[in-house]
Length: 483
Image (cartoon, rainbow, N blue to C red; front, side):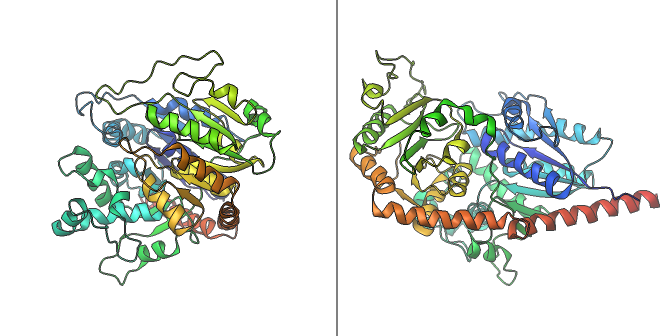
């Protein structure tokens, strides 16, 4: 008799930072464990999913179901944070998700939701499915998310108002300047919503994390310490990373990669702030001059600046006589035509970082970008903008030693000046310090590759989840036969 493999449903929140790792997790479940996988996405992100599916070796690995668009205009303030809007959007999509799963001829054995989809776990309970949360970031971030909602008012007051570090049992403290924005204002809706997420995560059957054992040994040990009264996470944690998008051959025809082919090995700094990151107009000017003054080769993915004014108005984009966008110094492209390349809005990041000429990455420290940089042995200049990126930057610089950062955290009020930017670029590309960071990040690369190999810790970790799903399927089949 042929053994039936489990059917697993995954739910992804909007945004490439969530969609890409969910797709990669789905791919591993299919390729390594022969599961049937269905991935649910909100309709607003259908185009992102389709573009990523085209990059897979086999786009038909799993089913993708686009949930109908939802109108949240009547239930959320237009000025609310993007996190609040995503959470509300996921909540409003629950009826469609419930209907879609209920209508399946082959009911999923398990539902895996990402961070902002934790409310969907009630559907798993209703339909007798296993339920997991997938954290597309690191274990330190997870520890802060699940521990903060459990502290008493005095500790909360000390962290928010007295700006003392958030002390987490067995884990690194979170300095106030690195803390999540969601923790800072108890009167803001995002505070209420985010604390609820932190309380719901431990209700899962397990938590999958996009990290690996050797990267965060102490933090993962603290999460598993059942002897501690202050245990951070009350359920099993499964480090299954790194999950990143794989480089695909068609993108090698890209003109940017053609330019990189002509550059010396490890000589180029790549500058990108992710799919949603923007800088102020003043900071854009300083960054441009800093890159130019460093006299190092660069590829810069630019987007129009956005100043922190009441309207949040984007600049009208025009070009100078040499094609330089009007938000960069006049003549910037002409002066840097041999050493620099400016790409507007998008570039094939995974392919760029994998190129032999890439020597550094000036990054917003989103976890996807961080993983891609480590997996390609590329040291970083940490330039966090929002969310857990400040925590990531601290981990990269102070703990792992694979990045440098500015003396002050860049904000809308504080500008990192051109001289410091020039220095950081040269520290990465030219100075002896950069060679040391490059050596350390290459060791992390080998550690990550080992973790995801067939005999690695992350493969073993996902195999434990797969085994639980197989047991769950057998239980369902036994009950069905008994009925």
